[in-house]
Image 1 (cartoon, rainbow, N blue to C red):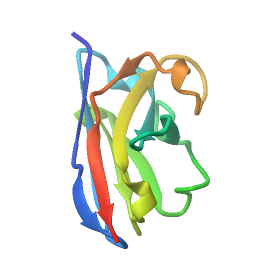
Image 2: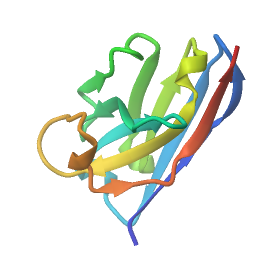
Image 3: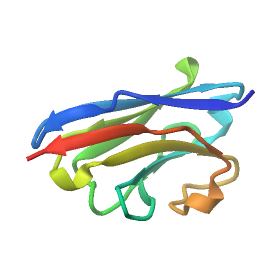
Length: 124
């Protein structure tokens, strides 16, 4: 059974850091390109960051560039999202997703496997 499980969400003050983790089971993470998306209440899901299968290349949404870092540890079957200098507008449910295929993409429908998400709330 293929499964992605996010963790690390919570309540944090503006300006603070938080690190999300996405643990994979039932698949070999090393062949997948991975992405993080988020969905705020009443809004559409949006792209946050993506990383290729080896971790050698990453891509970020403009809104998080310079503050967030995506990384992965294939030996641990885990992908991370380090979030720094958090802002209230970063409040959302964060999802990790996996896709086969070449390159890094930011389109959610290109990803075939999704986790259930973890809630991040940033207080002002």
